[in-house]
Length: 290
Ligand SMILES: CCCC/C=C/CC(=O)SCCNC(=O)CCNC(=O)[C@H](O)C(C)(C)COP(=O)(O)OP(=O)(O)OC[C@H]1O[C@@H](n2cnc3c(N)ncnc32)[C@H](O)[C@@H]1OP(=O)(O)O
Image 1 (cartoon, rainbow, N blue to C red):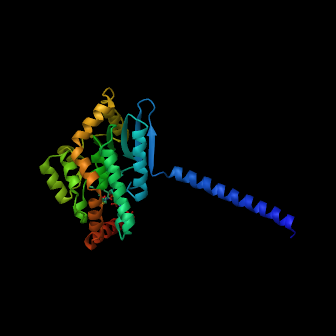
Image 2 (cartoon, helix red, strand yellow):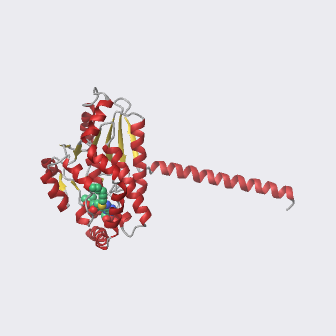
Image 3 (cartoon, rainbow, N blue to C red):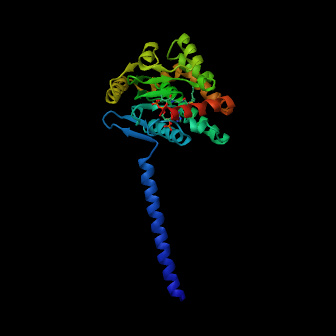
């Protein structure tokens, strides 16, 4: 092959390589868009954003999902949306909490990043200036329950389960979760629930005040959520937000100031052989159920 011919062939090859790269890049982009772990939909009329965990069937949290959720929370705050409805795209689960596969034989650095990302989301949600409501479209367990608790109001579907089951898995509840739970239910109920790692039915949760309302189905939950957010329509945002933060100051301060200690404690509980055994036992039991 002479040099002119070689140059021509190289140009054609490069063009094809570039085309190939472009196609695969576009493919990746579109599949990433379709598979976004968080979906945000804004109602232009009301200014309310609906943010949904999009990891069916369990909507359980991986590091990547939490990082995306954190960005979505920033967006709701920075774009000045009037309120946020938090839900999931899963048919029967709001969130089954942290992905137990992330906790099983974890790489310590990733485990730390996971817990740090989780705390970041909780701080942003717990202290947001905009009003928040959880449309709990199914089960909400562990970290999924706590995220719903960080919202200002909870509406749940019938026949679902909700609770902080951490002690059952060998993970001590952090001090901050004790105060956050007491902000919602009585101190007596909170102590019983957290020490037992209780998981409640929708009716039980309504009775103790862990949730505020029961909805017939997801549409009803979303309609009721909008109704709750609309209560604040005429209340100046800054005055409302600062007042909310005063009520939540103790929890926000604990989450912010104890972040490193919390991460260390969490890693140590998760790495404990007894906890590892309980994560594996849960996953095995679920497999054997079929
Ligand atoms: C105070 C701050 C708290 C922050 C810290 C949080 C720590 C955690 O979040 S630890 C994780 C807590 N979550 C759990 O213990 C598991 C909860 N899951 C359940 O209770 C049930 O799965 C359910 C009530 C959500 C649904 O019950 P259902 O009978 O419909 O389904 P299953 O047969 O149990 O499960 C189906 C399928 O999904 C897998 N799975 C469920 N939850 C998780 C999870 N959190 N992580 C990973 N995988 C999960 C389960 O193993 C089954 O998988 P296979 O189909 O492959 O067998």
